[in-house]
Length: 191
Image (cartoon, rainbow, N blue to C red; front, side):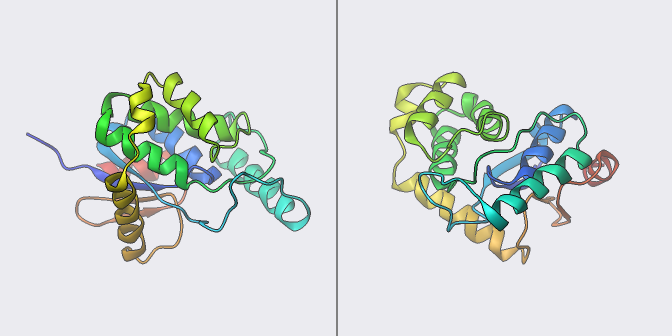
């Protein structure tokens, strides 16, 4: 029997999404999810720019909150937040053309940003992450209009949920779980 999967809307530059992704991975629940990358902050620059002042304080606060919500999660304060469209489109291309390496790429992309502060809007960084995930160089060069359309459709579907935040889990029965929530809430959602 083919079980329907929940949809996980997530953005690489959101520390709460990173924490939720790691939690689902550790709980062996990612296979019950269809990951969909969305941009919750599409205005962010390429390449990534350092954040200072109030933006830097906001980023420090987000990381501190995640450290409290997910004690033990490896996370470091990145210098800023990049535009994630290139990384999302790369994930789409892998999911469509090289699915055996796609979720490894997704996990490694979160870690590259949240543990190492790498600019995941940089094509060279993305190329390295594809290789690190075991993907082929053809996977890197196959981002096409269909991949961009899929990314756009994911974004539109996320907006149609009426939720503005990520991470967002949507069950096959349309129940929603919003934010980086405790493991007990996740278990209830999937039971």
